[in-house]
Length: 402
Ligand SMILES: Cc1cc2nc3c(=O)[nH]c(=O)nc-3n(C[C@H](O)[C@H](O)[C@H](O)COP(=O)(O)O)c2cc1C
Image (cartoon, rainbow, N blue to C red):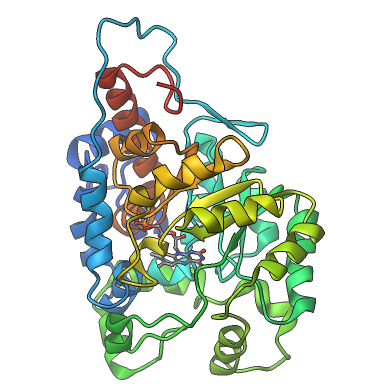
């Protein structure tokens, strides 16, 4: 372990549970020297998390070709640099829906985040607040809307998987509103329950099964297991009010599973648009006509996404879908994008093709699994450094306006 002082000093629980780097700038620099890229965090993360939990984070649909294609498609985007320009006044800050954020980057919704690293939602929330970027809370998160709104200090976006039960649907939106949330992201790209072969092989369904093998794997990962003891078994925290008292773990999972994995029609999008008075972004758009349809219903933004390669292996990389959608939507709505972004240069690539804002999913969890409570902050530091460098190198004063 790094940075632990002399033998007379006793380690506290935080130091035991996450790599201890201290809280100062020197610690940030040490982390940057050791892990200057997001990819550097992956092997460390893999070692510290039981395989079934890491599979849950990593896995995709089918043969998982789209996960690779997402990255390759980014590698293939060229940005022709412009030199001989003054770079005075370069700024990464970005306005979206009347708010000014320090970066054009948000944390994507990741369901059951605490399964990957217990307490991950809270670590993301605090890092979002510290760095003035938005965090999106999944409908199936392991932390409540109310607690996350406080922890992000008002920078929380809420992702809605629209529940089959309308009472729950409207209650979730009402709770988001009461918590002060302005931005709701409605996910429409899960028309059937996901089929991910690696998940099936790992024996992981919506919630982990407690099998002797999984207990053994957990025991082999002491940092992770101690975090489970500290934070508790992950739960669908936002569903507690809707589940009958005394329901077992499995009954809860069946209840939650029964609410999702269905097609969200344009009529339902319209009903949600009519009901939600804040900003509405539709997530999972890959076709320009779908983008036009939701914008004509009043959506404030479209989030071009293939769910990080977790839906269909045959979908296009979202960065390839971006130019046609940007052209179709024009200035009528904000354009957001995720799936495969792994660097600040990728952020600039997306912005240079017309994205106003981007989201990243897995990278924040690689950071947290590798570095505990420092992980999300370190990922943001990497992205900020890389984006600044890429903007200078290519002659951009602002990420979204060359
Ligand atoms: C483990 C995991 C869980 C996810 N859960 C959700 C979710 O609950 N709701 C949602 O809209 N998207 C979910 N996503 C998709 C992400 O929001 C995002 O679209 C995707 O991770 C972006 O790709 P990237 O991981 O390559 O950055 C999940 C992704 C992962 C990896």
